[in-house]
Length: 264
Image (cartoon, rainbow, N blue to C red; front, side, top):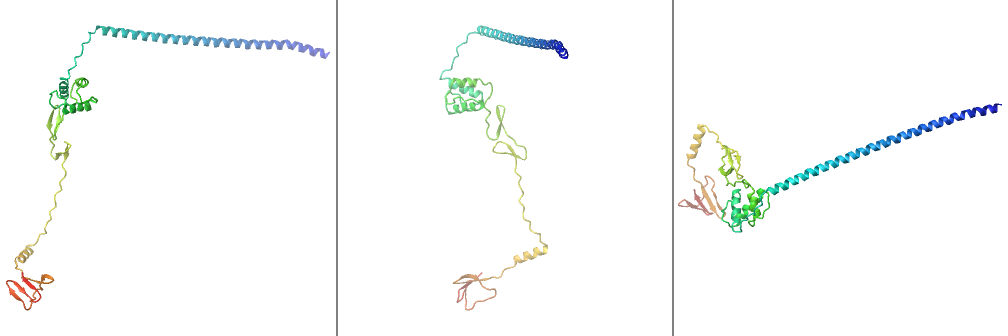
């Protein structure tokens, strides 16, 4: 009897489990479907956003091309309105050096004569122009390129060259004047004069009047004559107060047996 009751209870629980399982499965399926819809909507949004970006770039590019086309058309119209260019008259080989010399003088690089002879002075002038204008023109010959380059300068290019003791003041040279206590050095600059130290003079000690009188009296006092004794070994002063024996006097010369004595 109990076995039949247990079997009946299990049969009653089985439909309930099946219903719960079906509900869980249906919920998972619904959730999955919702996720797929969300992902599809996101993909659609991104696709639409990319299409809009491409369309904006395409429109911008088209606008730029339109502006460039309009500028090109305007440039062509301006060129068409210009008069035809005239042929440039190049100076002949005869007057080209003279014209270049004249232009170099105008920009302050040529100080020699404008005679049409492209000599060493003219070459130095064009080389000087190269250095101050930052160019590398061939200074050995007078060329059209060099003439055009010099003509392209509106003002002075080479600085005013002044002699020693002068400085440039605009287009002329003026004398350099140093202020008091300064002198002009070899670099044309004023520098301070070196300090001259006074030479110290040796001072003699002052003497008393009595000492000075004694010194003057001593200098005025006649000195006693001395004798010089000469023999085979040379000459020397004779001892003071000594007299030689057997000596013969002859005009201040005394001869002895051993030599000669001279009175001084």
